[in-house]
Length: 379
Image 1 (cartoon, helix red, strand yellow):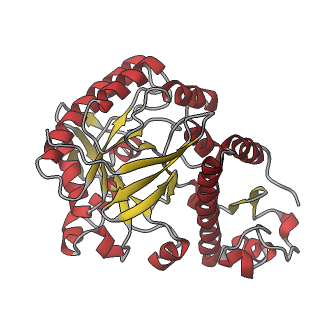
Image 2 (image 1 turned 30 degrees about the horizontal axis):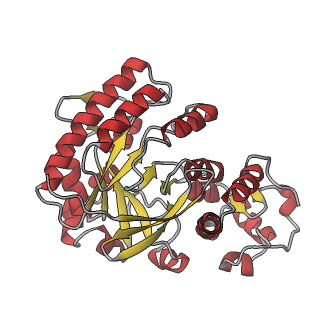
């Protein structure tokens, strides 16, 4: 196999945990870690445009292979020279493999040795994903980081189901690596390990994925419905065994408490739809905790959503006005609340990195965990 190109440099470390800062280098784009990636499933972060993303300063966003494969399709993406040209976004892009969507959006999935057969959730048309085909789709998308096809079992999966998932995930990982190494281009490939909350199976899967020359390693199949204590126990159980020379990505996780737990256990990368989805549902994240914008108590308030926030929304609009927009279902309610939440996440991650660099991550962890595990604020 060809020599593995390193795309990650570790910088500061917390002496009391596995938390660290670093730099992710993607085709000339330097991204400080730990990093949160907004989710642009179908080539757009819902209610925002590329100018908003540039203004917010996000240098790495996520797209979804399953959805982009179905619409607009690889022919359109190839015609435009990739997704970044299609949406006019010039920074870095990660695409997941679409495997999770195949399993979660389809009730008639059929596993085969070569891959997985499924039907489109849009029109019922039949499709077949293999490890190689998923890479080909991501090549058409033009992502900087591609994810391998894996089998993500449900959070309540039996041991037998999880073992089957490991067999497929490991076999598909080997096939994907072999295919990628024949033509890497300027795209990096991340492996995914599974195992549910069974620590023995988790470590077995991690050992297998670590042995392959991936550019980075991702934790799959957590935060998929398992009890939170099991999530924390699993993260703590694997933290001593991860490869510190490669970036570690916790897939589909992006709440404040879960990011804190992830970073404490060595995670460098996160993505989640919750900051944008919650914004559209009238919940924003602030320096004082979560705020339900639809609450009647904000009706006459001329204060900003977050008195400590410097985003353009908080500088200009009152929480009373934003509440009104949600109440009457104005479309601007979505865009203004989403912009604020992504501004909050960007600032939160910057402050998190700073806490590691100056040696007070433990205090930062306790402060924000307590703030976001209590009830919504009343002010």
